[in-house]
Length: 335
Length: 144
Image (cartoon, rainbow over all chains, first blue to last red):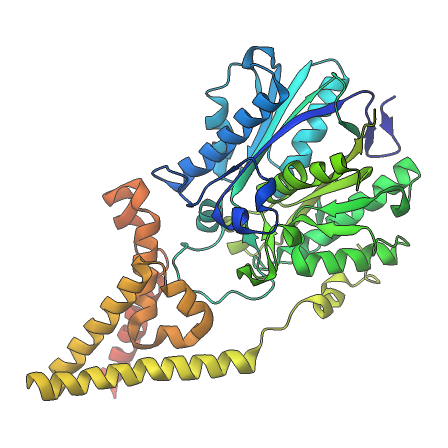
């Protein structure tokens, strides 16, 4: 049985063989800028519209990923992807150009780990020899869909997050590589009853805490089993709450916890509480954290991608924000 | 979920409080300066061009609105607004920004279904309730 405990899947010999990342100007200018494969100086990324720009980022991330993995399109068995836009248009339109089967996924900003977990399961189960996953977000496309026009003058509070412009792709297969996808804990939808669109960290922290707690219970592990526990985009507000929630549950993560949203920008970049969006977790994990693993500073990490499953219509109808978090264990392979 | 079982209440201690006093001061000063600019423009139009007070006021409004539109177009108005807050809404500049930002945003969907259809997405509410209030006040004025 590959299901361990209540919500955790344990994989045998599934490897993250290659990754690709593409980012926009703010991310390239951030502290991790040098770690990304492709960087654009302009939000339009040489395209006519922001939606096309986002699509280009996803396409570039995929191309770099396949190139680094030394795999041609014909050798791929399945593509799993999702993004933030209505009807997942970035993923769907990108898949239009790929000559292999596609499963579209939506988990808001948890999509990076959702696709990685499901991709690993398909490979482990023998339903695919190789799976390609991708996710993307774009500051301007997300702002316009979830909030206001980008140039509208509104005073944002400190709890607001800044959507990361970028895309990340990962190639999963059986061929032994440097990173093993060891396990995944699939999250439950948790709704804390919060309604503030400009404070998603507070809304998502309970979902992240729930998934992490369940992960420890299922695998009989504690925080010390990980060199790093990293969340996707809880930002400055949400990450403090998560630490408190885990402390209440008896898990102390103060020394080995971080949030991708806090790593992707410099404090002086005027990004309020930090980065968010599908690409936030994807580019930081695939671009930066895996390089740290290669260097040997991280041996085993738990990546917890957090997603707020809302739409602006639901918020206008006074509904609260449901949230989800999916966790994937990535281990460095030695020798 | 925990934080000892009243998450919604307990979580407030971790959420940053909006700096109300600082924001109010910024809004007061920047909104005030915007109005000083408006007043200076009005004086200039009256003295320099010899137009009436009423005409000068219209010209001044048009100048401020044009300025807001220009700043929106070159991507500076939202930065100003983040600093000035309510101060950035003085002299219809905020309203101009709401129309232009929405129009710019939807340019990619064409002039009709994009720009024209979405232009009043944010500013429309001000127009609708402006008309409603004007109508109610008109009726009150007529009766009294």
